[in-house]
Length: 180
Image (cartoon, rainbow, N blue to C red; front, side, top):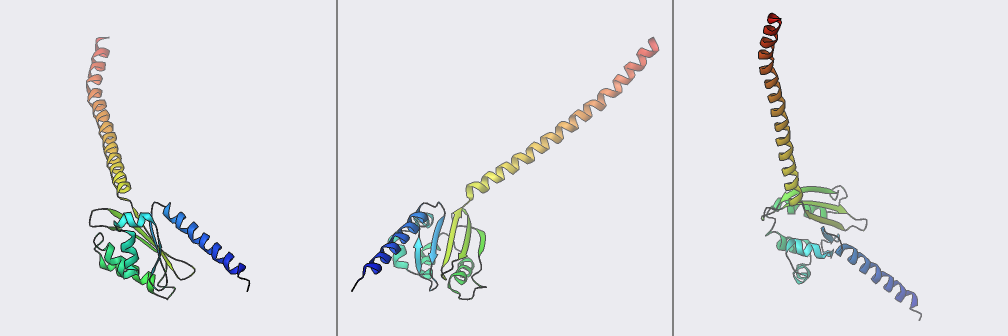
């Protein structure tokens, strides 16, 4: 029998999977894809680094619950994990609606998370550490407030100096008119 088409299709599928994995590995966000059965289908190197887990641990974990056990030491909020599991495992399209938010980890990082349902029933979950960006935003807001306060103080000072000089100048001007 001629299996040329089958081999060609398998090679194309393998190439597609390699392209997906290479694409995921180049992302700086920690990304994991869970199938509709809750099993871990794909993840990138950033996911491993973000949660400080090895590929062998992820392979042994296998499903969403196992991955949560590996990640819960960094993010203790079980309500968060329960809600995320609902996005992954629920077959109802309403429950799988995209979600995003921000949480704080046990090591004081600020993490933005997103979940997106994929057309094949799988769910993509991404995490990004935005701690440095939030610190920078806070520093910029503080400097902006300090600049506004300095501007107000300058305006008040100029107003006070102007007022204080006006009175003696009026007196001197009046005396000069009298002398003339």
